Image (cartoon, rainbow, N blue to C red):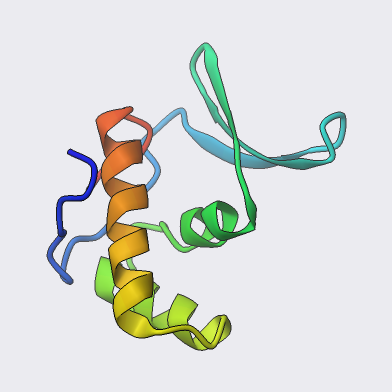
Length: 94
């Protein structure tokens, strides 16, 4: 599923039981899932913070491109890959 281009209208959200939290012991953001933990980089955190169930993938990509002064198309490709990968791991709903 990684690398699949999502529709700009896809609305990503964290499923029930999945939490984005700052882990003070690790001094970094993590995604907590039942019996799993994912350590995240800065971009992963920014993507997941915007996966609130009301923001589309297109809006999310546009906001990140503005926030990081990056090429919108490159951001879209990276966001699609990230969301597809985490959807395959069943820690994000599309």
